Amino acid sequence: MPSILWSRCRLADLEGLLDPGLSLRQQQRQGARLLAAWLMGRLLGRKVSPQDIVRLDDGAPSHPEAFVSLSHSGPWLAAAVALAPVGIDIEQPKAKRPLGEMAALLGWPEEGFYGNWCAYEAAVKAWGAELLPGELQWGRGELRHQSLGQLQLYRLRSPLPLAIVCTGKMRPRWQNPMLMKAEYLLH
Image 1 (cartoon, helix red, strand yellow):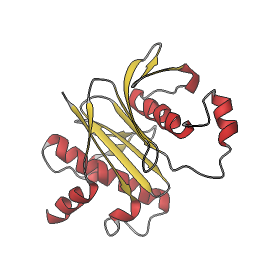
Image 2 (tube, one colour):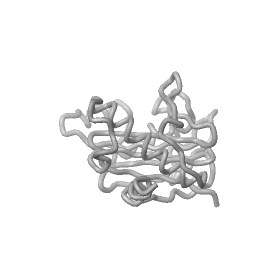
Image 3 (cartoon, one colour):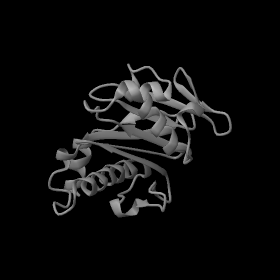
Image 4 (tube, helix red, strand yellow):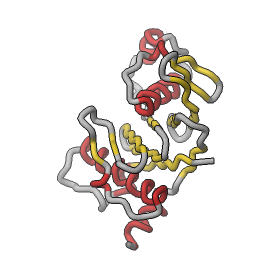
């Protein structure tokens, strides 16, 4: 069964590898691209430079040989790569957000809101399409859209909400970011 390679880490875990002159948001993007390059190297079996992962006009990450998805929230970064469309999203819960109002607006239960939000955001990334949350049909381990089809859905809740979606039957395989960092520094 083909795999999705994914990882997450804190921005501070990449200290010394990121440009300190960049803004926080730019460092988050640079860190997520670095994480994706390490994953892409494992997927393709050769070293991949973070500069090989470019941003398209719509802001989506792109690589000519595989699909890539990036996410960052607060101090957290996440990336996923696969040979089929994939999406990943991570969300640092924020105490000041009006969760009750947001959940009511979207028709979701307040409990589990962030997990649903991550799944929705990951689906937008995998399908590369603008969607309204109400257009999705939620099933056990899957998301469906009337015209776009079906995505497999994988969720994690700890240490914070994260969702991975893909178009095929692929199993997400976590890759240790500290091990990838050590391999990167050795070469």
